[in-house]
Each structure stands twice: as structure tokens, then as C-alpha cells.
Image: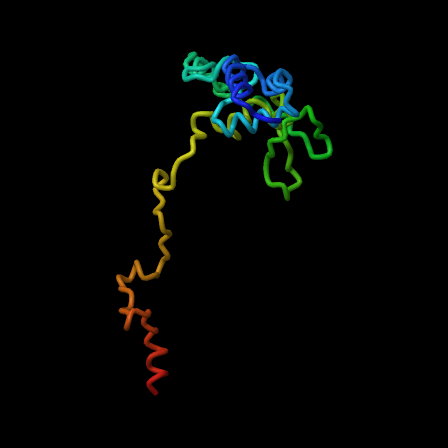
Length: 183
């Protein structure tokens, strides 16, 4: 398609009206919507297809300002009830799969209570297995108390050793190699 000044002005006008690339392509007689998308990108026009004009404080910005109540953690007050102690052979999809005891012993079993919809455990065991949403925040290594470089026990840092001096800009060879070279 030949992009003239007129077609570019129509493209800008329709984009500001919030029209999609398909609608603009149909109106301009363009070969495809991708031709419209490509031209819009090259001249710096944002196409948002069906929404209002893309201006600061648009639809998404307004959505972000709407206060939403934080959902309470559904397992906060859950307790584990009297467990049924279901053996492996008896367990079905309607039974909590929280393991009880040592898997190698004959007394090993599963909880067996009714699980929470979409989970493998009953509400009481979900409380133990999953963390509340606010504790899942990602922390940096510095916040966790980790150093940027791992310390090796018994390494140079612990013994107070200094790196060997270089000779003529090249790193110095270890003493053992230097002694063998001289002998």
C-alpha cells in the first residue's frame, strides 16, 4: 500500500478514535491489518483496538486507582479434624492426601478428610502446606542476609591471606611452581 499524507492522517484520526488495526485497514483499503500495525509503529502511533484513545490516565490507570479489598486467606482459621487414616489402596480423589507417619512402615496412611476444591489437602492441611499470600513476596539476596559472593570455609577470606603479587603485570606463579622452575 502506498502511504500518502492523507492516508497517514486518516490512520492517526482512526487510531485516536480507538479503532482496531483491522477496522483501520478495511477503511483505508490496506492489504492487511499488519500493514497498518507496521506503519503505526514506524510513525509512533499506538493502536489499542477497541478502547479509547491511548492517553495518560487511560482505562488501565483508572482501574489501578480503584480500591479493592484484599481477600482473606481462606485457610487462616482452618483446623485439622478427626482424620480417617486412609491407606494408599483406599485413597480416591475425594480424600485428603496429607501423609501420616513413615512411608516405609505398615502404619503409613493419608488423612482422608474431604479436600478443598482444586487442592490435594483438606483445609486444615492446606493451612500447613501453603503460605498466606503476603508472605510470598520476593526478597533480594541482601534482604535474606546472603552476601553477594559466597564465602568458602577455609578459603583466602578466612585465613587473611593476600593475593600473590604479580611480576611485570602477569599473575605470579604459586611458590611450588617457582621452586621447581629454579631447581
